[in-house]
Length: 253
Image (cartoon, rainbow, N blue to C red; front, side):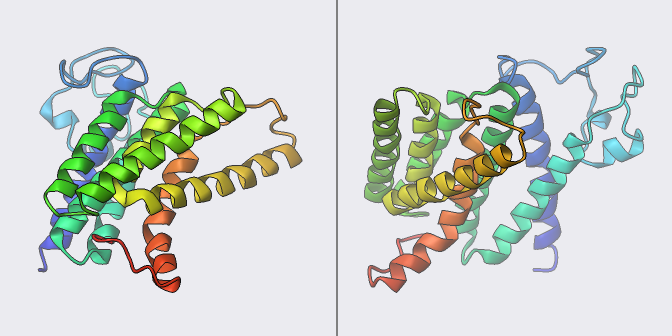
């Protein structure tokens, strides 16, 4: 047991490193499955010594070993964030299978937030892949159950599509795919809870930006980050609410 936490942390850093590379490529329309990693400035192909999570950044003092340009601190910060998230999720999960499901969702949400902020898009490579993984986990009995996952995906997609129709484009199809993915992980109540939390957080942030003059009523905010935060909150609050109203917590929560 003493070695599990360090292993989980190292795995989280490795996943964070992969997420950072995937986000960089997806935001620029570059395939994730082919091609070597390169320095974004000099385009030099990176070797194994350049890709060790956190260690490479510290060893090179935050600069590219080939051109000397400073590397964004976002990369080690993301690796530490994923390591911390993986450890916290491990401590909060009753079984290893539950942790795998939660860590997968967490990683996908982090990647979607960064891609939405950088490029204003929620790529199918993340949402559709996440939907398939969630369905597989449910079929294996690791999460909410296959029926709940399918209904959750349908509820998530349909809810956003209705909002898109009613608001004449206030949200995008990418948001619908993202909430469908979340619904497949968390079930229908989780999808609805995510939308409630996401809308609340978006309203609070939007009001704050308006009051401080950093945005106008015509400013469009990416909704992906709010859906991601809503999913994390719904993951913990929805089971509590279901127990409170006497419906019981969904399987896998």
